[in-house]
Image (cartoon, rainbow, N blue to C red; front, side, top):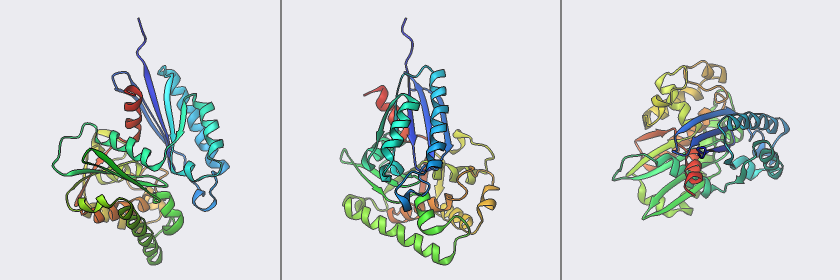
Length: 309
């Protein structure tokens, strides 16, 4: 009798390193996330720093032990913005492959958006509007939408870590920092609209689906959750005014005060406000009055591809 196969997806993002293990029926066996801040300093130095590498390696070794427990022989580890931008990204991939014993790949922005779109839209009911996903990461933000059967996507050089390091800072946001962040974000949005003209036809008629850590943590804050509850934050609807409220509230606080709030994930208190600046700007540009949160994301898209190549 054959043993049911389990597969694993690992995402080495700019701010977190995550794992999803599913069985052959695509049922979740384990889902894990750790804040590793792999992109620490990458925007300024173009180098993955030793301490960031070690944090990530330690988590990958832990994840391999979880994969062993689940009998995983096949998987895919993907690296995104931080590794794309770093001159020593190859060194990271070699060690990641050694520690996890699965295939590894650097995704370009369009591949990242494709996996995220497939994962985030699976199981959604039909809608007359175009479904756009916004994946706010640590170093990049992906936009993707299917138009006439073709996936249109763009990866912006915007992320909660990148905007924090380049413009906002980790503490209370000053007026000058606020202006710098808004200008940085609008410049990237202008570039996205220029590169993908079809985005302009969507304005005011979109179902916007938000995913990744900034969105998930925002949903936890809005729900006042002391501990993570997937069912409470998956497919939660947030209005634009609610996202703006949390952006302004967190921008006026210190990281310590943010961390004291029920729902704030430790390791995000110094960068979440930057993610919300991005989210508000995207919602405003698309004319979206609300956001549907999704806990299904790039990991789910990867496991789907592993089970149905």
